[in-house]
Amino acid sequence: MSNAFDILAKDGKARRGRLHTAHGVVNTPAFMPVGTAGTVKAMLPESVKATGAEIILGNTYHLMLRPGAERVARFGGLHKFMNWPGPILTDSGGFQVMSLSDLRKITEDGVAFRSHIDGAKIMLTPERSIEIQHLLDSNVTMCFDECTAFPATHEQAAQSMRLSMRWAARSRKAFKQRDGYHQFGIVQGGIYRDLREESAKALTDIGFEGYAIGGLAIGEGQQEMFRVLDFTPDFLPQGRPRYLMGVGRPEDIVGAVLRGVDMFDCVMPTRSGRTGLAFTRHGELNMRNARHADDQGPIDPECACPACGNYSRGYFHHLIKAKEMLGPMLLTWHNLHYYQELMQGLRGAIEAGTVAAFVAKFAAMRAEAAQGDA
Ligand SMILES: [Zn+2]
Image 1 (tube, rainbow, N blue to C red):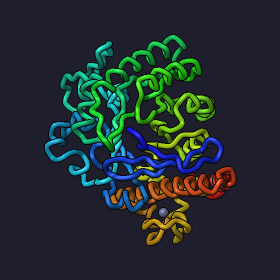
Image 2 (cartoon, rainbow, N blue to C red):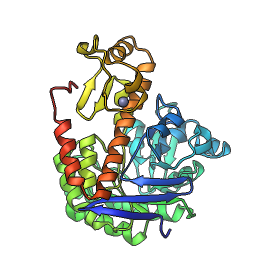
Image 3 (cartoon, protein in one colour):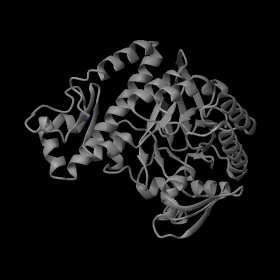
């Protein structure tokens, strides 16, 4: 567990790092495309790599229900099964059990629920979640936790967080430690500073290779999220990676990097691509909008992705209106390329000690509402 994460440079609280795994290196700050059910939707694995992504996220909940973790293991693990040879982080399944399944019952032992696919009764415990992630051959295994709802009173957030900390201890015990394989604890505690501190202390006492900040981006708003991020990373050890789960919009990521976060995942670039939304450095473009119908220019003339190099806005407008699958494919590619270029820009700026200027330029361009029409 030594030297799993190097910090190469710092600029203010922002960190430029490198996470070593058995399947390769992840340069941070990093954005992880979401590969929900063993695929980053609408993308070939080699296309995902071409955007600059070095690590993807897999969803334990989806994969345990279909095709099943034991089956993926028989195929040699998720890397081989989906033809993604690079690093993979898996979530614990806890968040999606809460949001997708029926008839959930939380006990000290775990969560009993019914599959949203076939209604089968399933029990997910910390031990089973860690076993599933092991079967998937995940490079970064997440602790099984309960994502505290928002809003929650101090007492509700405390009870939920303390249950997650007991589950974190069980998750660590169930984790098979090997070189190149890491486990991250998840800080909970809602919007409450004392609870975040208590949670971070409980996790660092157990000791993990990295730490996630959970329970944010669930409706509290960016201002409140940034307030929690103003203090939570300070409760975590400097030499370990920090992962903000489920975040987010480009502005959220940039703000979190400035506050000392290293890793991110979000469905936004992929999901938005499938509904016709393109992220650009000048704001979002909705390709459904009729004003693009006769526009022969690219989505972003400065973007080096295939969607911008070879196709017009008018063509994307047509593809989306005609529900042709090439539209979602190319827009997903463009959006992932945009996110990875943003991360690359942040990494370069931290190395150069110019992150403040980079962020000021980013914000000014993104605010150019004249071009954006989302
Ligand atoms: Zn592009």
